[in-house]
Image (tube, rainbow, N blue to C red; front, side, top):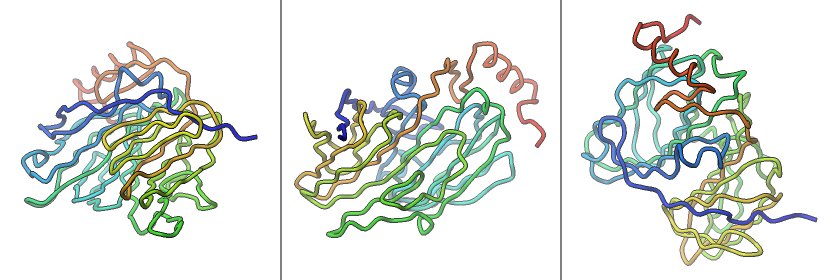
Length: 284
């Protein structure tokens, strides 16, 4: 008999800025990381005002984590210390594994218009903290779509849904990442893995989440899900959109130093010393 995942915590993003002044909603970060293991941070950025995002995210370091950027509108140029460069646009994903260390920048492309996206940080397990960094750009056309009729779809970025497997594979942490669009008043019951932590972020419209004690979750909020092997979501009065993310918890200590996340204070100190000395980037 299946057990429904219910909402155990509802989080509202706080307005902040990052990079060179990009305005965004920080949905969760360091204070909530232990409850959402292996996920560390979730940002929602988006504006029709270019001055809110045009300064972008100039060159900065990462170590010990993966950053997943999912563009909804607009375009972002990427360049990193591995020699990768390119542009992601609407529906595209950038999945970057910082591993032992990477320097990169993300800069909005073009004047005016809107830019909207979601960035997730995934912690790496101790055994993979210092793995060789790698970069993957996934185009929207590569992402499988489950068509449920009446305009309702599931985009499978990673993991498996309705028999379709996402294009992002061979991950250090097995993450399931779905983008779910439901037409108004549509109900979806989806199987989930019971040994994973999971959350839902609503980014358009609203959903009632849960089968036994449904909670209404509106755009700009994150619902942390309790244990279970199914989740029930019901769209509100208008078409609504959410991301569903799950992953097995690592259960390891977290030492957080801004864009670098390790297991101990000593490892953090070593990383920042290497940054200062210019030895942060390891040979391939």
